[in-house]
Length: 239
Image (cartoon, rainbow, N blue to C red; front, side, top):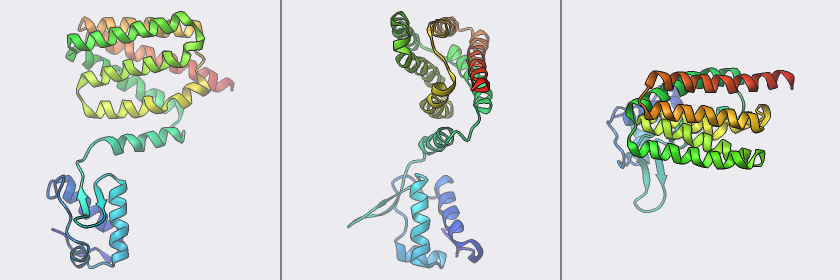
């Protein structure tokens, strides 16, 4: 299954070989990698190099290292959690500019809204309308409910992502909305006028989704994100 590691990049080569074996299905979820002694011989590497490579694979979420009797390096099912976490770290460290994040969201949120208009069920619409009712209650209580309102806004966007059934959209938007509050706290003022504007946008968007108006839903979502990004950019320039 494996070849002796290339001596010029031993560590990386071991990681890449095992990773490829998992990704192309030669190693499947739940399967245990060969014993340490056997892997050392296959790769022609030291015990320290092997253990370091296995730790990296565990950090990537590709294997789980189990200790004790019956333990070993067990292959995990590949999911989107690691991608989401990596993107989340990038956003939290604010190495993504507000402009880049805005550009990405304008495109993706519009696409997601369009797919939601095409793929929703009656239960999906019920959930979205229930979230709108909660948002309305927050709006009536004023700016003191700003954070609660923003959380509902987030849940509406994530519900639309879930409706698409696409795990990539779901994972990426979860990561963005779980971490974008750092930008909101710095650059977004959500007083009554902004809360009302946001709420009205969401109502129109849910209505378009319910009516199956995919193109209108795309336009509304993109316009909504674009407008509030402009507010944040203006505040960023003045800060």
